[in-house]
Length: 323
Image 1 (spheres, helix red, strand yellow):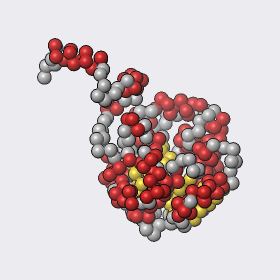
Image 2 (cartoon, helix red, strand yellow):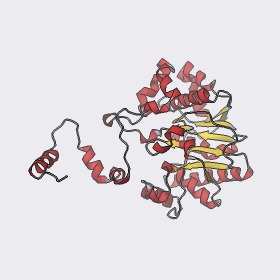
Image 3 (cartoon, helix red, strand yellow):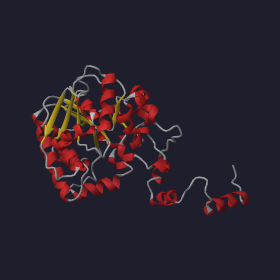
Image 4 (cartoon, rainbow, N blue to C red):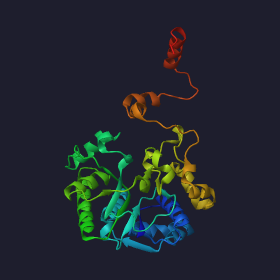
């Protein structure tokens, strides 16, 4: 089994840096494993313009496959076209991983015994997913009713055997993704769910340690094989960063300083979490998803005066709570 990365990148983004760190972490824990890069012509031609860093990056891979894609498409669309078509572009069994990942330990070959495997998105059934309403809305826009779906898979790590069934699945997935783009749905996971349903649900669940997703995968961290820090959950700098690699400036250090600043992460990805991180669950977690929270959070400034906070303090002083 080989490890497969898909990369569409230009000098203005940090996806090459993400991929480079991920591959270095993979090599650290799996020195003999074969690694393949699937990219498009526009991205490959731009690697040379990124100085020695770009060519050093290419040397990390045992195999580089370049596909010709419409250069007028956005980087996201080109990336998703490669991802949804990768089973038909790459020969042999592979474990696909997103670039915003770090490997934590050795990945054994021929395990688990599934033809197509992935982990649930945020490690929970769709019925209790904190973004269920948004997911259902996206699925409806691409003509798919996901209200009865429980297994909604995260596409960041997928084990895919080289079978005819999987090749047909990916052909249909790419077709469904392109149809979804007409409805301005550019995420690949709604079309993955639609394709899975159309094909009779061939995707089987991988153990959650194979795609331990930041924020929601706390219980799987100590046994994680792949830590998925999810660049999509990066906050802005004023709110602080949950994870060190959510900071674009931090990733850009790779070009000027090499691997030295990241040695601790390559050995133990958990060291990238902010030291003052708080774990939430239950009603507290759901409250953070509400408009009320976003409204209050937008008006909060640490150390600043808050009339509401002052009035609540006065209330507590006049009417102390009974313990």
